[in-house]
Every structure is written in structure tokens, then in C-alpha cells.
Image 1: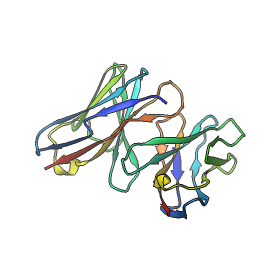
Image 2: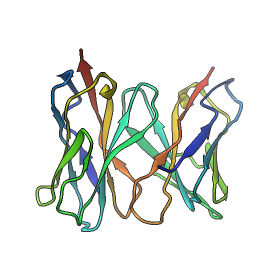
Image 3: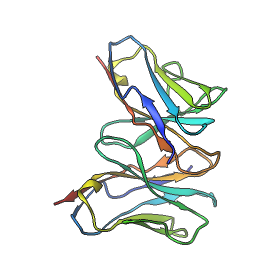
Image 4: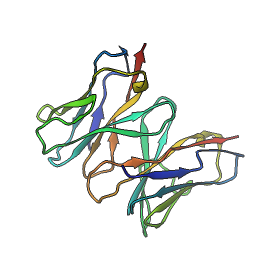
Length: 112
Length: 116
């Protein structure tokens, strides 16, 4: 079975600084997707970024980028120029032959 | 992105009553929808996979008779919490994928259920 591990329960970052959230996963599948979702206090799940496993190039969405290391099964999220609105829970998720599998989440606080 | 609408956003009910939560895909058809439960400060726990026109697939430990799922159309799935008890109080979230593959899922706004 697939597992997703987020080893940082909580993190904080100063406004305008850069922060990296870690995620590792375990799977025997070769064709899959990885996602980072954001859950702000409203609790609405928002897709931040996606990565297809067959693509070597790391995905980027404005201030958000990933470092995808397929061999190491690592999928970290980098947030540049952090903003107060980035304060939220961040979940790493794996999508393969089964429904989405989520990590336990990292609570990110952006400090003014 | 695709839009998933969940209703109601919050509900309070008395112990022993049943509550129905609706999940609609507004701009796409979804043959499969997913129901999650989330406890405070925890991750999403998959309860069941809702399949249009057939029975739902429940995760281990989830009571089928307690959490009734109906997926009667390609845009609507419902979760009914039957004979609710205070321990059923939680945040319930649905999601759906526009495609058949492994692409991202889109989520409803969630429903906060409080059983008193």
C-alpha cells in the first residue's frame, strides 16, 4: 500500500522568506501523480501544485515549486516570498491506482 | 479548475436523527466521488468511494449501515449519517475527479456536523 510521510508537523517562516516543506512516499507503482494541497482556516482544500511522475522537470506555479526526486521518492514544496495568506495546513498527496493518499500535514505559519 | 459543491456547510442535529450531506460536481461529470472525514488538526481519512450506479466501496472500519452513500447521477453523491451520535461529530469532505485517471481531485467546501 502507498504511504505518504510528512515529517514536519509545524513550521514557521518570516514574511517574504522562503520555506521548504518535506514529503516522502512509498509505492511500487511507476505511473502516478503527486500533489500539494493547502487547507486554510476555512478548511477548503485547494490544489497548490501537481507533478506527474513521468516528468523529470520539477513543477512550478508562481511562488510555489517542487523538488521531485523520483528515485528517492521525495517530493518537497518550496514557497518563495512567503505571504501571510500562505498560512495554512499543507498536505502532500499521492495518486495512483487507489484514491488519493494524504500525508498527515504540515501546519505552516507565516509571521509578519 | 473544476468545481465541487457540498451542502450544507454546517449542520447541528439531535442524537438519533439522520443527516444527509450532498456533494455535486458543477461543471463536470464524476463517475467516482470520495468521502472523507477529518478530525481537528488531523489529515483526511478516506471513508468510502462512491460509484455512480453501483454500491459504494467502504474503507476498513467504516460502518456501511451508519454512513449510507448514494451516487444516483454523474453529478451528485450523498452521504447520510444515520442514527447520529455525538461521536459522529466531525468535518466531512467530498471530492471528485473530472477524469478517469490519476489527476487531481477537487474538493467540496466540507460539512461540519455537530450531534448534540
